[in-house]
Image 1: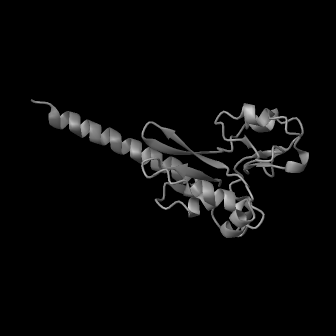
Image 2 (image 1 turned 90 degrees about the horizontal axis):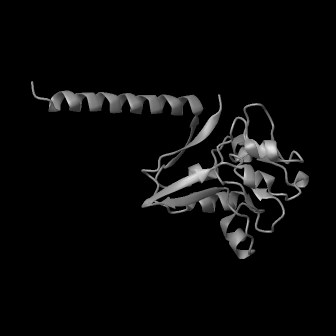
Length: 177
């Protein structure tokens, strides 16, 4: 079963810890102090966007029929397996930006040096070591969770059922006989 990153925007306070953790884990040293001291700018693969008064973490959804993958003329955007995450291979990239334009969520960006792109890889190397994605681990409020897709779907159904029951009870309790 595939795991996905689920966002609870009610818990996000816009601190950008996820962006920083992502940049550090994708740096050459994977160490915050060294990355800063060396002046490295590795870039992050999750973005905190503001909408009104809300902070919303936006990341790659690893779409089933990924438009970025379909748009890439060199195969630099690919999957290792049918249900695996959508990945990026810099050696194959010609910096044409087709994937950037094709992404419906706007989460693929050009790298700071302009050669290649930045996109979430679900921290596939961390997962291989039994670790969760860096953005999830470093979120201080638990706004980001790394869960089985089916578990996330079940939780949404439970919340929908709860809203329906509460609405029905409110309707029945508020009506006069």
